[in-house]
Amino acid sequence: MRFKNFGVLATVALLSACASGSEDKGTTSGAGSAATAKPTVSAAATNVIAPGSQEDLVANVGDRVFFGYDKYTLNDKSRAILDKQAAWLNANPAVKIDIQGHCDERGTREYNLALGERRANSVKDYLVQLGLNSSRVRTISYGKERPVAVGSMEASWTQNRRSVTVVQ
Amino acid sequence: MLGLLRLSIKWFHSIVIPLAALFVMPAHAELRIDITQGSVKPMPIAVADMSGKSSVEKKFGRDIARVIATDLERSGLFKSIDRKAFIQTTDALRSLPRFGDWRVISAQALVQGRTELVPDGRLRVEFRLWDVYAETQMVGLAYFTIPDNWRRVAHIISDAIYKRITGETGYFDTRIVYIAESGPADKRKKRLAIMDHDGANHRFLTDGSSLVLTPRFSPELQEITYLSYFGNLPRVYIFNIDTGRQEILGDFPGMTFAPRFSPDGKTVVISMAKGGNSDIYTMDLRTRKVSQLTFHSAIDTSGSFSPDGKKIVFNSDRGGTQQIYVMTENGKSVRRISYGKGRYATPVWSPRGDLIAFTKMHKGRFFVGVMRPDGSGERLLYEDFLVESPTWSPNGRVLMFFRQSKSTPDGKGGGSRLFSVDLTGHNLREIITPMDASDPAWSPLIP
Image (cartoon, rainbow over all chains, first blue to last red; front, top):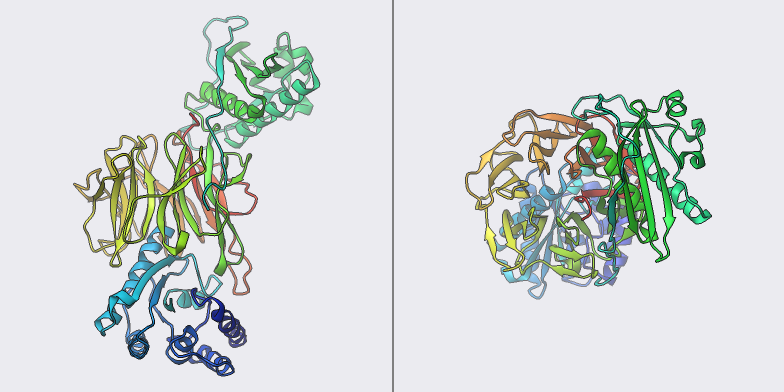
């Protein structure tokens, strides 16, 4: 059930990402479960992916990392994804990115705006540490305003506590 | 985005004339409700349709009486008696109440009045509040206004009745600014909206093209400060209700959020994020001078002034989890005040100064509660899956907040509605809005 849903989501996202590419379209890849990453790749394979594009990042690197409840620290899995992002950004030097910070619904609105800002900056700081020029990065917090998974349950909250790297 | 709507609130020019008591009785035990008690037995009150000569005047009289009855009933302090039970007719009431007729239907208080369109086009509304058992007039006033303002006159009369019977200032002639929500959870459209406290005269102030959050009134109500993602840059804005103009507050490099006016309206307290860290700042609206109040690596946000403007209560996780702290208006003498179990957020100082309302999170549940400014006397007034963002009635007796329901993975549920509850924890009421609603802010009494 879950698997099927994500397949549909990913296809939609890839089509619309060509048009704007500026927003988090609800794709899931990166540090998500293997089950969610697969359909993204297979759907992407049917399109021609431009190197350095959002589709490229989603399909071949992973555009997001996840955080614990009320946490903004990176774990080993997150750092592995971000290592790949840093290499990808290095290989695509013209690319500038926005890092979005997001939270689950179980916090107050204003605090979550601040927490999302912390998460986005954790990712930015790590990428800059790896050599990314900070002028290529902007951060933006959406707090709990833009969940990617709907449903008041841990499975959704886990996916919503995230940062998403978006090609500008 | 600019100038979407012009909406003036300065159009109300009323003249208030005290009406002479029709007759005076010796001192007696007064009709009175003590609203500090836990649970009040509502006082039975009869609100008669106001009389008028023409059919237009009669209609104003009927409509005004019904708004008054609804206001009083919703306060939880009064029980409005069904008008079908009334014995004395509106026409007969034009001379004097037959008190026996009102005692028979158990009315303790009676509201009667008269409407008249005067030759210059204005509407004259007079009312009298009677103590049915003592057979005395408790208050009598007359108002002149433009006819379109009849609802405001009704609310002003409700406030006068509330004040006469409880001894406290009312809260009926007020407005609510809030966020109207529509669309699926992952693409929620949010618009700034304003309405009377009872949901009437609802208007949208923004068109939904930018995400907007957390609006708050200035003390004189001409301005609303709020957060907008206009141009994908989350910043604090000020919306001028008279002109419809929206203006960014200051020139800040990072996200600004969580704005609130000072009680004198001259300053706005905000949070700003810099390198991922949020601290509290104030901005003087006249000189544009910005002062940083907190210098801490923790999240400091949701600042709210005390009614005398001398202190600021805020939210910080400097102790490890979100808790409530108080400091002076220039950032000195920071002191933690919340020590209960769980996380505490969104502190708001009561207009009376005696309490601080907050959101509390504990074991996956959300609460709205109050504590004294020294942190003592914590009382939780409401609990649910997600309740947040209390805002005070101007008399400090009622709290409004929003409640979001659980959602399911197929997108069902997740709705968000406004509710009010008395400081006593009783009298929970939904505030009906045309669509989902969050982040309410209750205005002061309309000047």
